[in-house]
Image (cartoon, rainbow, N blue to C red; front, side, top):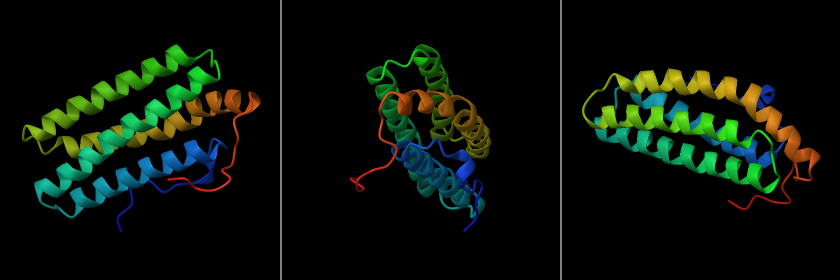
Length: 144
């Protein structure tokens, strides 16, 4: 399998729920990369693209909910970053659906750069706040 991003423990924010979601994002980015590299048919690529867009929204919602529940002071700034990313991803998604096949790779490189930087700079900061305020770092068992 072709891999664009290999998960590393250096990306961990030490909260299992968030780490598992980040791993899902990495997996979806790699899945899209592989579909583009294999030159799969457009419907297959579109399905993966759709899944990546949906999961990005879900992940951001979870992070934002945790920030609000635990009164994270940087919530507004973090949400603004998420909103800008969603706008960019949705724009690229719309271009792809309109027939611009070149945006697939543009999206991948954008997401790769964003994800690696965002996790290591921004998410680690808010994760520290969450653990300091009682968020459990490990699951009792996997629920999903």
